Amino acid sequence: MGSAVNQAAFFEWLCRIGDNCLILGHRVSEWCGHSPVLEEDIALANQALDLIGQTQFWLGLAAEVEGKGRTADQLAYLRDAAAFRNVLLVERPNGDFGNTLMRQFLFDAWHIELLRALEKSSDARVAEIAAKAVKEVAYHLERSADLVIRLGDGTEESRARMQKALDTLYPYTGELFMADASDEAVVAAGIAPAPASLKAAWDATVSQVLAESTLTHPGETYQHKGGRKGVHSEHLGYILAEMQFLQRAYPGATW
Amino acid sequence: MQGGEERPGIAEIRGWLSEVPDPEIPVISLTDLGIIRDVAWQGETLVVTVTPTYSGCPATGVINLDIEKALRDRGITDLRLERQLSPPWTTDWITAEGREKLRAYGIAPPIDGTAADGRLAGRIARLSGTSNLTIACPRCGSTQTRKVSQFGSTPCKASYVCNDCLEPFDYFKCI
Image (spheres, rainbow over the protein chains, first blue to last red):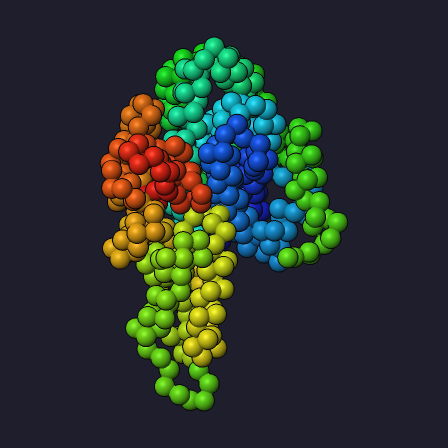
């Protein structure tokens, strides 16, 4: 249980999962009012809402585990970029609609495997959040897979855009499966699965959907990394500048 | 309770909660929705346990305020709301009465056992442009309907349109 694990490692791990949801949720919410059609606008906004809701659970638990009196809001709004632990994939710019959907699909296919494994976590609080989130993420994955197939196996234009998105984003997926000492500590405590253990199922989903979409799998490519350790691309700073502005300029503001 | 009066029974309190409408879909109550997981006295304190529908549902905060207001209006001042995540809320808990109220309001109620499982089964059927579910139009009853989007006006609903009466409608999707 929680007491058996190094609390600093547990906190670090909770920030990783919480920050993935937070930064992707924020990215997806940037589409609100800008999508190609109304239905997609609503779908993206609802998905962002799910992710931000899950963030509240994960960062809420992170704050509890940390035990320094911070809240989920304080973790979200008052940390600097170097303290964020999300993977580089989720801070990638939205690009066009196809790029956004490809990023979502690559993430969802991983997210669902992680949550399924976490339902069996030795920490009851983690298992509860995972059991709640996995039902929402099942809808995310079905939607993003559908759209990757439709747009990949679509017009010449949509196919070209999806292939470009895949080639751009695939080199950011390797970080999802990397592990360091913090991961090893939570894995040893039975809290979480080893990141690498999710790779086979993720590969299978990605290969199946890409085959149906007629897109070409990029194969083994160079993989970027750093986000999980707090070494981010320049994009995260812009996200935080927008997301954190209000609480930084007007500390404690509520409405 | 103040004044040493007899405190109200659980059945009576549940009755009061069954009159509190869902803030997003006011035709159904919080008890119809199945989100009140427990009502119990712990000493002099009434503890109401509520489970959220979707993680990010913005109505959750409003629901808690509405519960508090409804109970305070009935004279219960010593009150605590607790959040319970597990077992996670499912549309299976929407009451039969709640489902009929949804239909009458123009929202197709959930069809149990059809929640997404993320295993991508049936994807081809969905891609053909028609739903793999038979969702009856809540207005004309036709089963010739098609899904427009997995996500509707709120996270809990999908957008459909009826091929016969041509009306768009919401389907309260299973989760």
